[in-house]
Image 1 (tube, rainbow, N blue to C red):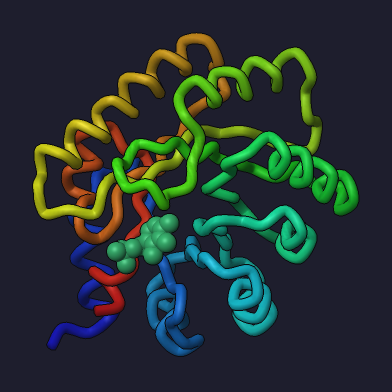
Image 2: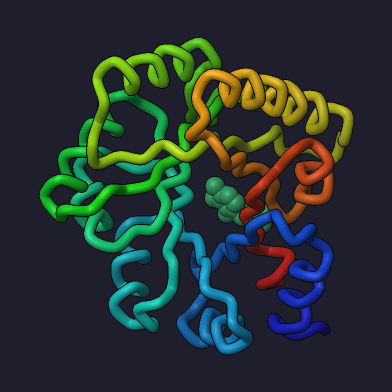
Length: 215
Ligand SMILES: *Cc1c(COP(=O)(O)O)cnc(C)c1O
């Protein structure tokens, strides 16, 4: 069986230089994170607030922690002091709370808006229309402690490549349209272990890979 480090190096080597790798370390122990950290990698992703705050306290302070899961409004305060990027903003209310907590901590918090592209009903995320409204509102009524950097999404969890490709491609088209209007959009966070090679072909600038590394 290949080691964590070998898996990491393989994934990393398969990515174009301009695609950012978020190593998803959720449920993995400190030692497993340190193995990848020791090789020079600094960007890790977690999807539970408590797990993230505990790991942040125990691990080196130069790690850039990305919050990739569904974030409850009442938990923003726990990660606001240190989080590097919040991937899955799925409501105007959450964005306002991030702004409020950013103000309290005197730091601008980088965010991505989560687009709903998968067919599954349970998935969180905003419709393209809702994203358009939110972006327009952010221009008319700026939130000074929030920096919207782009969009994030999850494609349907399926082996059928055509479905994944169609969903990701529609998002890429939408992302480019919005980029024309809002020059501050530069990140498209799509692609996980099962679909990141497809996501890169469909315009991803940031992939979130867990199980392909921590098998
Ligand atoms: C777990 C998770 C990932 C990583 O998934 P893998 O299949 O383990 O690569 C990426 N994004 C989000 C939002 C996740 O929750």
